[in-house]
Amino acid sequence: MRLLIDTQILLWVIYQPDKLPAALRERLCDANNDVFFSAVSIAEIAIKSSLGRADFPFLAEEVAQAARDTVFLELPLDIRHTIRLATLTWHHRDPFDRLLIAQAIEEGLRFMTADSLLAAYSDLVEIL
Image (cartoon, rainbow, N blue to C red; front, side, top):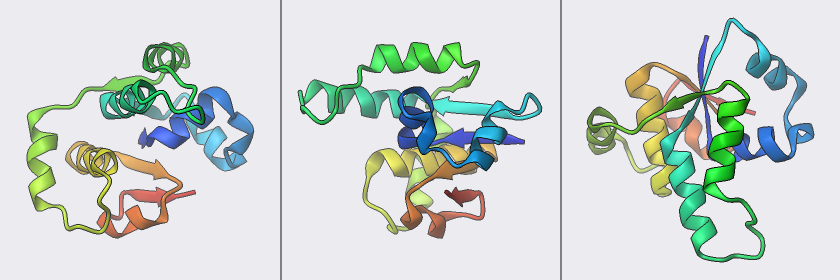
């Protein structure tokens, strides 16, 4: 199975793995699954980090390296993903989530998220 994890799940995997349901941890660790993290998530982290928010201590470079160290696969953002945005309905306004959904649809990836609003986009979305 091919999975794309959203930004929140990526941060939980790295910094708070106990927040992940056991079933998801098993799927993320299963060698038969390809687990992707997106350049979109790293961009989101970089932007939030640059705002200097006290409640957001994460650094994009650290998160990207930690994700690579877990053997997750990097998913770059490409033109097909951005063009897909034009076809998405407006169930959700967060541009990062919309880009992640577009990537999941274009790449045929199961999208793992805790955000229940995203389920309206596709059967590929799995809510934790």
